[in-house]
Length: 62
Image 1 (cartoon, rainbow, N blue to C red):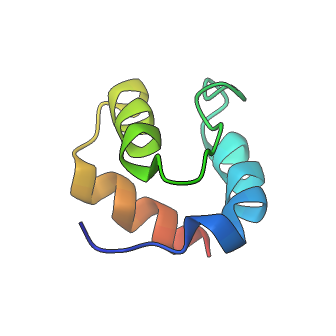
Image 2 (cartoon, rainbow, N blue to C red):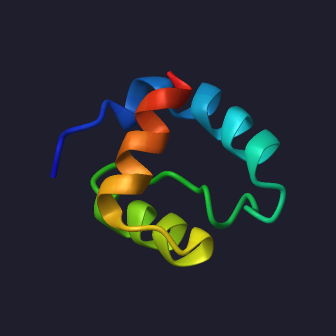
């Protein structure tokens, strides 16, 4: 995986993500340290995107 700095930027990214995709819920976007893969999987499933597309999209939010 192309490493993201989720921990430091997550609150900012979460707000932007919810603006772009209204069907993403707080549960979908709940960040737990060490569970980056699980978080990416939830977003990937909800948006119907590949893992790489989700990572690229999150990077574009920052």
